[in-house]
Length: 138
Image 1 (cartoon, rainbow, N blue to C red):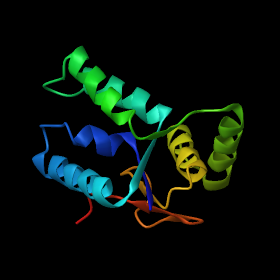
Image 2: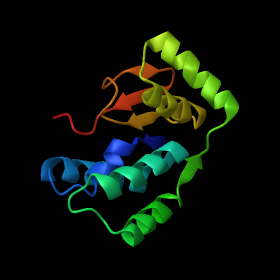
Image 3: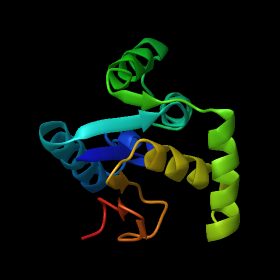
Image 4: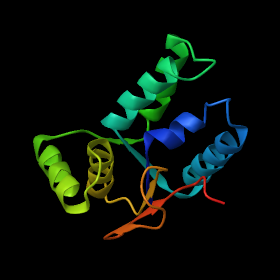
């Protein structure tokens, strides 16, 4: 199975402010490592670096954040393209979705992911063969 991770789930793996969410995110990622092909997008990598270095407390050093991103780059990474932008615009119009969420959904669909781990979309919602899963729900 192909599992696509949104930025928020990855950020929680480092967030010391909510240990419950951190542990759930770590469990989700560890499970995907064992059973799935993990896919990310360049958007996720951009956001991950930005959020972890600006908003986490304590924030990782620049060198630590660089190492984290380098490790994430070892997974399948979907890049942005002009057709992907146009497809995301169609998603915004069709589902009345926020722009950044539409970009994530578009990349997950393009990767042919079967699950999208995120807290930003409706848990259980389906987009064709893709199912949205919020790993933080009880």
